[in-house]
Amino acid sequence: MTCTHTHTATHLGDRPVVIDVAGLNKWYDQFHVLKDVNLQVKEREIVVVCGPSGSGKSTLIRTMNRLEEHQEGTITVDGTVLTNDVKHIEQIRREVGMVFQQFNLFPHMTILENVISGPVHVRNMPRKQAEEIAYNYLERVGIGAQAHKFPGQLSGGQQQRVAIARALAMQPKIMLFDEPTSALDPEMIKEVLDVMRELAEQGMTMICVTHEMGFAREVADTMVFMDHGQIVEYAPVKEFFTNPREERSRVFLEQIL
Ligand code: ADP
Ligand code: MG
Image 1 (spheres, rainbow, N blue to C red):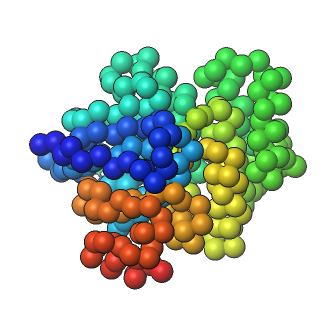
Image 2: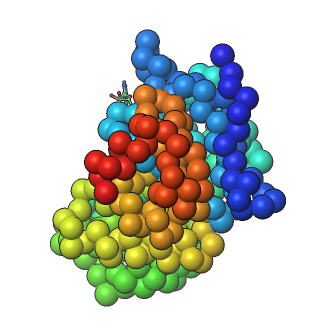
Image 3: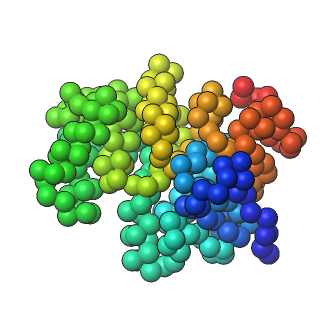
């Protein structure tokens, strides 16, 4: 069962496609979690994915860098087709940074160690060079002064900004965010969204799973609404907010706006 309809940002012209998800199906045992998902993401495009809890948003973006395996369809990231070949998986993971709801920092390492661990251990970068890059990104997310603290000594918002710096230190071409502000107290949400907004302005290609609709309206190019493992609505951001076509997205927006 393959759906040939491709969701692609025609409103962004002929920019190159950097992520191409085609005919994607995934099951957890008997449970069909992703159903015929087709989605293209273009260079510098900001895609916001929303939808009810359990609709498959996390599974979709986790599948894109092989944190989850898929059974049907193809995922192509910057020209590399994601297969079981470890070389392909590593290649794709080098290009894709990911930020999770729960920060996932190493608690026993300092902030600096957290940020340099990828470049040093995965990329074999000399420590000194990795530190320079780390300080640079920590400055950019406003955490430069905290480099020698441990994650537990920072607020949730600060930890999440460190997690973003850690992902950026690997110099990815694409960033995936999975509800990066959902675990944060309200006063810390803005500081994380501001960092994401800046990243978008600097031209990063991003897929953000988030229910922060203010952020989505301002920053997104394209909105994806998922329900029951399917893309139910795909639209340029203005269209999505002013005139959602699907009843389910309409109801969802009414509930959260
Ligand atoms: P969302 O991020 O939209 O809340 P998820 O992708 O986390 O949704 O989950 C989609 C569905 O898949 C849910 O019904 C969830 O319970 C189920 N699911 C998620 N992860 C697993 C797993 N590892 N094994 C079995 N079912 C899972
Ligand atoms: Mg989720």
